[in-house]
Image 1 (cartoon, rainbow, N blue to C red):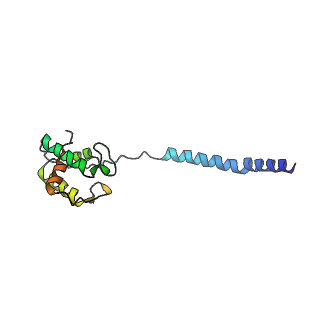
Image 2: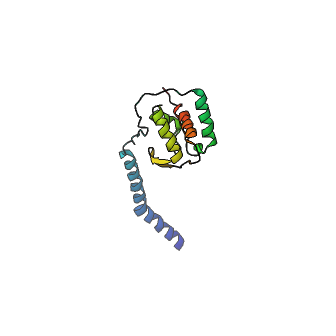
Image 3: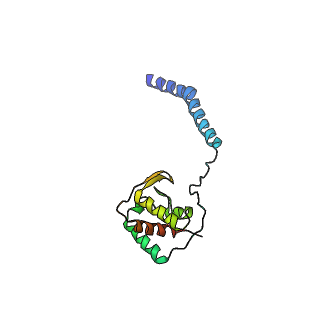
Amino acid sequence: MIKAAYRSAVCAYFLMFLLPVVISMAACKEEKKEKRAPRKQVDYIKKIEGPSDSIPASIAQRGEVLVAYADCYECHKKTARFIGPAFEDIAKRYPVNDGYIKLLGLRIINGGSGAWGNVVMRPHPNLTQEDAETMAKFILSLKKE
Protein backbone atom coordinates (compact mmCIF):
# COMPACT_ATOMS: atom_id res chain seq x y z
CA MET A 1 0.00 0.00 0.00
CA ILE A 2 2.86 2.37 0.76
CA LYS A 3 4.48 1.54 -2.59
CA ALA A 4 1.30 2.43 -4.46
CA ALA A 5 1.06 5.76 -2.64
CA TYR A 6 4.71 6.46 -3.36
CA ARG A 7 4.19 5.71 -7.07
CA SER A 8 1.22 8.05 -7.17
CA ALA A 9 3.24 10.82 -5.53
CA VAL A 10 6.10 10.38 -8.01
CA CYS A 11 3.69 10.44 -10.94
CA ALA A 12 1.98 13.55 -9.62
CA TYR A 13 5.35 15.24 -9.05
CA PHE A 14 6.40 14.37 -12.62
CA LEU A 15 3.17 15.66 -14.13
CA MET A 16 3.19 18.87 -12.10
CA PHE A 17 6.84 19.87 -12.25
CA LEU A 18 9.01 17.91 -14.64
CA LEU A 19 6.69 17.49 -17.62
CA PRO A 20 6.26 21.26 -18.18
CA VAL A 21 10.04 21.71 -18.01
CA VAL A 22 10.61 18.96 -20.59
CA ILE A 23 7.93 20.43 -22.89
CA SER A 24 9.35 23.96 -22.64
CA MET A 25 12.87 22.69 -23.40
CA ALA A 26 11.61 20.91 -26.50
CA ALA A 27 9.79 24.09 -27.58
CA CYS A 28 12.97 26.14 -27.14
CA LYS A 29 14.92 23.74 -29.35
CA GLU A 30 12.31 24.07 -32.07
CA GLU A 31 12.45 27.89 -31.87
CA LYS A 32 16.23 27.88 -32.14
CA LYS A 33 16.12 25.70 -35.24
CA GLU A 34 13.71 28.07 -36.93
CA LYS A 35 15.72 31.21 -36.08
CA ARG A 36 19.02 29.98 -37.52
CA ALA A 37 20.02 31.68 -40.71
CA PRO A 38 21.07 29.41 -43.55
CA ARG A 39 24.81 28.85 -43.62
CA LYS A 40 26.61 30.73 -46.38
CA GLN A 41 28.59 28.64 -48.81
CA VAL A 42 32.09 30.09 -48.87
CA ASP A 43 33.97 29.89 -52.15
CA TYR A 44 37.38 28.69 -51.05
CA ILE A 45 38.84 28.41 -54.54
CA LYS A 46 39.67 32.13 -55.05
CA LYS A 47 40.44 31.86 -58.75
CA ILE A 48 43.53 33.65 -60.07
CA GLU A 49 42.98 35.24 -63.47
CA GLY A 50 45.53 34.87 -66.23
CA PRO A 51 46.23 33.24 -69.57
CA SER A 52 46.51 29.45 -69.65
CA ASP A 53 48.68 27.26 -71.83
CA SER A 54 47.91 23.69 -72.79
CA ILE A 55 49.58 20.65 -71.28
CA PRO A 56 50.50 17.76 -73.58
CA ALA A 57 48.69 14.52 -72.68
CA SER A 58 51.95 12.56 -72.39
CA ILE A 59 53.28 14.93 -69.70
CA ALA A 60 49.95 14.85 -67.85
CA GLN A 61 50.02 11.04 -67.89
CA ARG A 62 53.56 11.00 -66.51
CA GLY A 63 52.49 13.40 -63.78
CA GLU A 64 49.53 11.19 -62.94
CA VAL A 65 51.88 8.23 -62.46
CA LEU A 66 54.15 10.30 -60.20
CA VAL A 67 51.15 11.42 -58.14
CA ALA A 68 49.97 7.83 -57.81
CA TYR A 69 53.37 6.68 -56.53
CA ALA A 70 53.71 9.59 -54.10
CA ASP A 71 51.55 9.97 -50.99
CA CYS A 72 49.29 12.61 -52.58
CA TYR A 73 46.10 10.55 -52.41
CA GLU A 74 46.39 10.34 -48.62
CA CYS A 75 45.20 13.95 -48.44
CA HIS A 76 43.84 14.80 -51.92
CA LYS A 77 41.22 13.35 -54.25
CA LYS A 78 40.70 14.22 -57.90
CA THR A 79 37.16 15.56 -57.67
CA ALA A 80 36.26 15.95 -53.99
CA ARG A 81 37.73 17.94 -51.15
CA PHE A 82 39.28 15.61 -48.57
CA ILE A 83 41.94 16.68 -46.06
CA GLY A 84 43.37 19.00 -48.68
CA PRO A 85 41.69 20.55 -51.72
CA ALA A 86 40.58 18.45 -54.66
CA PHE A 87 42.97 18.42 -57.60
CA GLU A 88 40.19 19.84 -59.78
CA ASP A 89 39.80 22.77 -57.34
CA ILE A 90 43.53 23.46 -57.53
CA ALA A 91 43.24 23.42 -61.34
CA LYS A 92 40.32 25.88 -61.14
CA ARG A 93 42.37 28.30 -59.03
CA TYR A 94 45.63 28.54 -60.98
CA PRO A 95 46.25 29.50 -64.61
CA VAL A 96 48.36 27.02 -66.56
CA ASN A 97 51.65 28.82 -67.12
CA ASP A 98 55.30 28.31 -66.22
CA GLY A 99 55.21 30.65 -63.21
CA TYR A 100 52.41 28.81 -61.45
CA ILE A 101 53.79 25.41 -62.43
CA LYS A 102 57.11 26.34 -60.75
CA LEU A 103 55.23 27.72 -57.71
CA LEU A 104 53.15 24.57 -57.31
CA GLY A 105 56.26 22.43 -57.77
CA LEU A 106 57.96 24.32 -54.94
CA ARG A 107 54.87 23.93 -52.74
CA ILE A 108 54.84 20.19 -53.38
CA ILE A 109 58.51 19.93 -52.38
CA ASN A 110 58.49 22.38 -49.43
CA GLY A 111 54.94 21.84 -48.16
CA GLY A 112 53.07 24.77 -46.70
CA SER A 113 49.80 26.10 -45.36
CA GLY A 114 47.45 29.03 -45.66
CA ALA A 115 46.60 28.87 -49.35
CA TRP A 116 43.61 26.55 -48.72
CA GLY A 117 42.76 27.30 -45.10
CA ASN A 118 44.44 25.92 -42.00
CA VAL A 119 45.43 22.56 -43.46
CA VAL A 120 49.18 21.93 -43.52
CA MET A 121 50.70 20.10 -46.47
CA ARG A 122 53.67 17.92 -45.62
CA PRO A 123 56.92 18.59 -47.47
CA HIS A 124 58.23 16.12 -50.03
CA PRO A 125 61.98 16.88 -50.07
CA ASN A 126 62.89 13.67 -51.92
CA LEU A 127 61.17 14.87 -55.11
CA THR A 128 63.15 16.67 -57.78
CA GLN A 129 61.91 20.02 -59.03
CA GLU A 130 61.28 18.45 -62.45
CA ASP A 131 59.11 15.66 -61.00
CA ALA A 132 57.20 18.08 -58.78
CA GLU A 133 56.50 20.34 -61.77
CA THR A 134 55.33 17.32 -63.79
CA MET A 135 52.95 16.46 -60.96
CA ALA A 136 51.73 20.07 -60.95
CA LYS A 137 51.17 19.87 -64.71
CA PHE A 138 49.00 16.79 -64.22
CA ILE A 139 46.95 18.59 -61.56
CA LEU A 140 46.53 21.67 -63.76
CA SER A 141 45.60 19.48 -66.72
CA LEU A 142 42.38 18.68 -64.85
CA LYS A 143 41.19 22.26 -65.51
CA LYS A 144 37.75 22.25 -67.08
CA GLU A 145 37.28 25.06 -69.55
